[in-house]
Length: 114
Length: 114
Image (cartoon, rainbow over all chains, first blue to last red; front, side):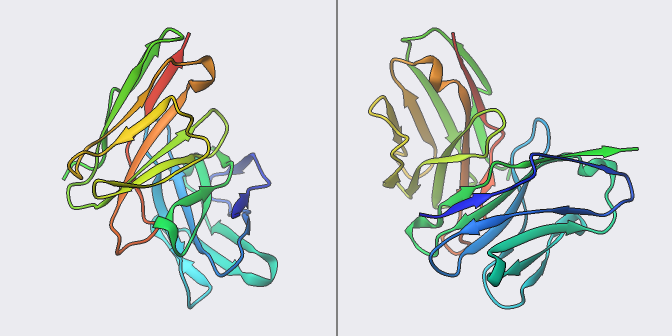
């Protein structure tokens, strides 16, 4: 069965500083990997996805993520955070079959200090 | 296109009552998913439809839960004889078969069972 672990429940970062959110997954084959963001009062929004090919993927809002097969990781990064990046971030793994349902991690809440 | 909409946004009910949530997906999306999210957790998969066919149900979905998508458009999720443990945010998402894992989420329906 597939699973996702996000080790950091909360992260506080200063505006303008860099951000890295960790994600480790367990899946029997090459997975589909995703990062979603949930802002207060809003639905989850897809930031970026990895299916195959280049292991460094670019997403919206200046985010990027790197797939590392050897570490079963898919960490999310942003070079310089903005106050509007305060939100909860979810890593997810998707099966390549079975309706492509997603299994989500527990999330990391990001607080941005002025 | 207004995205995925869910109704009601909030529902407070007494234990033992039945509740029904409605989801209107993005019109051209043939897949529709229901997830449940409790405080501090990531979304958990409940069930999904491809067009009107319900193709998978999670073991989390007890016999008190039933979902339908009668004409392959909107969907309903009914919970019978609600229990306090059913209190959660119920999320609906839709996607295209051609875009695996790229889910568009609604803002959710928050259920509180007293």
